Length: 255
Length: 369
Image 1 (cartoon, rainbow over the protein chains, first blue to last red):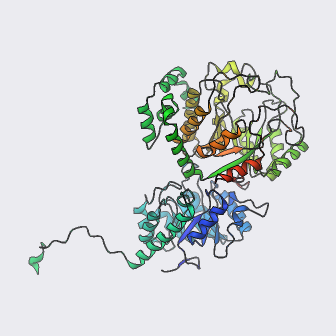
Image 2: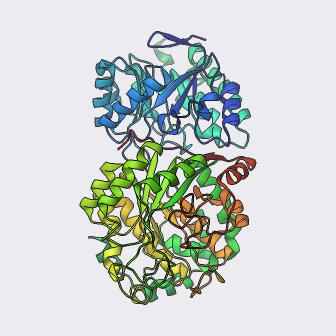
Image 3: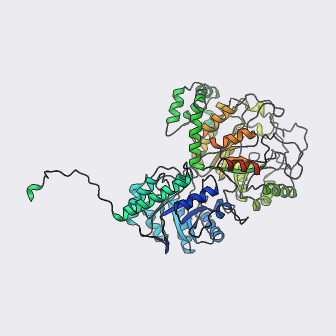
């Protein structure tokens, strides 16, 4: 299985995890470890940097785990840039998951503000991974702006509805010069496997693991599904035939 | 169309009748629907839905976990003042009540927040009565200046304000405005609020609009359960929520459920809302609205609160004092309402963890205006 490389950094695992919604920080830690993930996203707004003993962070202190702070809560580029700078200082990383969703109901990403913030943050030296709609044109614009990857949604965040945007994701994957990480809506390991089969570079999963009956076992299931999907993609899937093979082909007379 | 116009299209009596006429078939339709409407809400809060309560609770838990995870947001109220020029017949701070009136000074605020902070809180709700001569926007701004360095998230539950006042407070660091209509029964409202600024039904009704226009991050609604028919009142509250969510789409919403219970205080409730009714109501809100925050205070008993965590509630106060100065300055002054769950914040958090939920102390950052 090929390694994933984002902004020069190598990853063995193509599964990224969110850290919210778990029943306890310990359960979150166990799930992250079971998933084999090397990249987890944490919301700046959840971190208590004052006490220096943030409970989430203490459970993520493993050498193979990279933290990807996110700007969840920001409603526009200005707030996101400010939050990004705080996150960089607090977590000592210039990696950033850029999230700007002014709509608190469906948490739909704002394409205009996201592009604006991405341009600015790239100039400030951030490795930007923006959460966006499955919009192929926006992905190209973000590439021009200096994004390190794109993170289009499969369906509304937290919905577990799977790859509703698959036709657009396929266009994005086909056209992209940066890694494509499918971010939201992946509800089951089969969704994750499907995302990998169509050529996504990685997937990010949170709700489907955190809210599962057994989050740790579900994390393991996702690990296997992502690996299987990636191996299948690299092995090249057999083509699906649109028609049956006729025993007496209509064009045989030409031979 | 503003909410006043929408509200006036409805008749209390017709809504009440329509809710009471819902059949079990309507309830089943509501339960199986993908896109639930306010008609479905009526069915879900109707007497016909009572036999379906377990189904509702299961769905409510599922939706809540999907959206909010297995978490409970913790917050603490801070009563800044009990001075009040209103005459709300159910309230301990009623102008007519001969109690010692108190408005916290800056030093006293510091003492109180130190105590609240010690309990672990990072989200705080500032509460006052309505007395513009002493408790006004400048007072709030001064209080917020003291509080903001210590808390990630500040909400207010104070007298209704003007749009520009809300904007000022939002810029000063206020995240949410909580303003409960108490009852949406226009004809009965004056009986509960005979005098004072609060007597103006429509001014209060349009308060969330003013907060929404000011760009508040969150607006909290609610009905005081125990005044009027809870089903009809809750329908109007859900109608209000639906209107606001479509209009101020960048704002989050929460619903609270203050309930007057029998044998509490001097005011006897007109209608009793049983625990079963209450659970039905919480689940009905969750079933028509997967993202609204549902909040419960320490008015409710320990046993009820312990059980409601898994049914759709997303935020809880704990260790609350409902008297200004109650945490540190003047612990014996009169409370606005009697606390039923007297456990400390630590004890409640421990219970939440014991049922595999995570008590969340911080879910906002003061870096976001």
